Image 1 (spheres, one colour):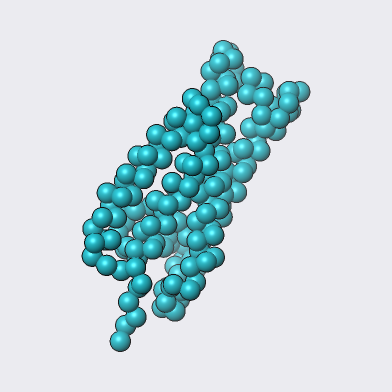
Image 2: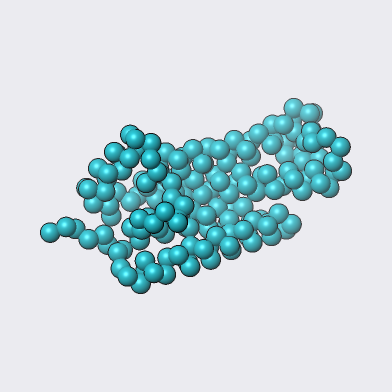
Length: 164
């Protein structure tokens, strides 16, 4: 008898699309609001991670959902850290303190626009770092709920370079 996935049920599969879409719309709002007020990047990263983990939990095979493999999640986290560090280092190379957005070399943009763009880039970097880290944690902890067949298929797809 084939082992059934523990979270496989009809209601979850049917509600997954609207739930993930709602999470992603709210994610955009949180990041945009964080761009104009304090905070937002960490919360946005957790929402992005949730919208990537929920289809994995529901064992959804749909191509409509953004899911990444464990190596892509680690790459996403590293990219976010590189964006954050890169913005800070660029400002330090101009002689300003770390993360001084006014010192970013962006041509003739006025200072408020430089600061605004710098903050948005930092928000994107932190969001990617948090989401990648949380999805990586999910993959590390999910071995208990995946069947042996799913783990074998994951190894095959990682060797071929396809996304899970």
